[in-house]
Amino acid sequence: MKTRRQARILELIKEKDIETQSDLLDILKQDGFPVTQATISRDIKELRLVKTLSTNGNYKYAAEVVSTEEQQSHFYLFSTAVVSIESAHSLVVIKTRTGMAQAVCAALDATERAGVLGTIAGDDTIFVATRTDSAAASLVSDMRKMMIKKNNSFLS
Image 1 (cartoon, rainbow, N blue to C red):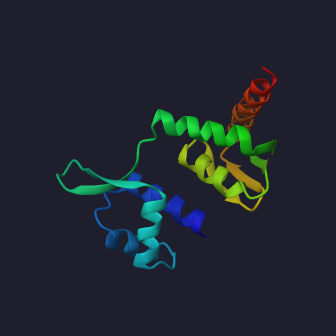
Image 2: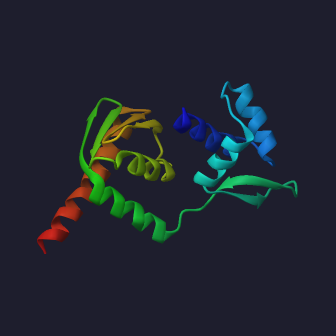
């Protein structure tokens, strides 16, 4: 539920100018998410939402821009925590070291890859639903490249 709710929050702030937590709370409740103000506050913090100036002169929530340093930390996380990655049509299954699936999943969500519809993480397994078979193949290819770079760096 948390992953779906946070994904919906990211969609909403792209689609609309959300100015307050109260606005976000009302929309999420209309969408069927049972949320409280405290939940919204935690989600905003976890998603690293920031307030930016909108075209109408008011402030709105926006996703924080991911820095090169943060991209490198995602690469490090993917390259050290991911054990295997396979796809079956538009579903990707990522196996991680025990206890690392949530972190890898959150980092993957933060990259906002085109074609990814949603993710679900357990303790050591992540399911990624993609829009197309080719989006799944692209994700698998990119993550395998990171795994190869990791393995080659240990050999040198």
